Length: 129
Length: 129
Length: 129
Length: 129
Figure (cartoon, rainbow over the protein chains, first blue to last red):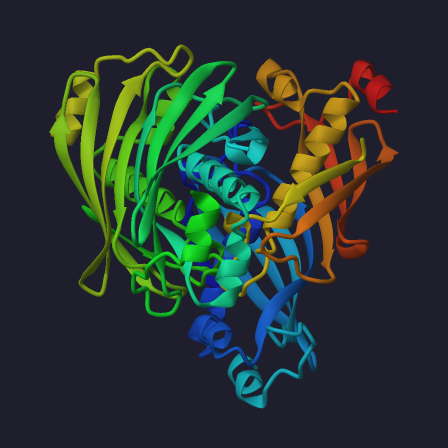
């Protein structure tokens, strides 16, 4: 449930022969979306509802070793903090037992039109606790 | 006006050392957006208006020579056909006088919610003729 | 073996609320890579070997219906032609039994440094036949 | 020299109607590449030389306000630290005088095959000082 697997395809790599650094953020977003989906929170529906959805407000990511074409990566996601209007996840990108990258990602719950931070609804909190 | 220049950055390349083939579609979309903008058609505003916007319905692209990191590319865009509910563009991707790729792109004007094809408004046709 | 499933994540969508058209080429490349991998052809190893690999030389893609955030897509890949130095695949992007897009993709076998077309080695042909 | 302008195109946005958060890393990489190019350091040539190039080892990015389709963004890059084997940049993403995001990016100089950190050559240090 808190592990999401991906394969590195050609689109993920760059001319340096390794995964382009920004792609890790895409991988981690796929992992978080799936993590929350399995907890009963459908982010696509939140966006479609236009009443409130999560946006990334802070990322701290450390790149330790590069990933390469064809690697099978495993993204580990842990929800470490639930505040009134935001949550914090720790995510590790693993390859064959080695940590390639580690990140702390903060997501705020906002109104999609105004961008104003909103209290995370209890219905969502109950799911993610 | 019908030429749009881009530089190939690391994000555009893949582990084969060349521009990833799908990126050419991104480059061509940037060039078309700018082409129409200079003709007085703001695609971002069309999307925001939610009354009708263009979507790609067909692409035929031939890759002739690869582009590489740091190359300065020039995208040539010509509007070759204006029909009732769609338009056709020819686009060439050039590098130092050589053609790297050539494409024919068809765009339909649709309703953003239903996806139903709409007649292109006269106000738009006047701009792009 | 000739079906590859993907989920549409936020990264795949655009402000029009649908999958960005160029992303289909990324999806199809993931499907082809996996298709050939299961047939015994590891494209990552071909690229690393620096003696010859496949590159896309022509794509004809028709977009029929848009895919949306959270959709589960299935990419069908069929190898329809094997020539001396190139192959042709037909690929359909399906959602719940409906065809969203169909494409014909030609790949040439080339020398990675010079770009010169090469005869596809018999060792590869035996795998993909 | 330390300002790099980009326009937000459809490819940069997501179904939430704003720029997809990972894209800022792409924008900042384009800005850094151009910043170093104007200082006389051609990153594409460094990669091609296969003797040493920069890779991102740490990013801390704070997202303040979202960017939207059609926005003209300006990326400000400052080199704040030059160490033996790494450098640190501060980068701000601006829109009409407002800061949309701010990041601290650390880049290490490494051997492209082994990934081992290398001392930044004096020839490069002279250019970037």
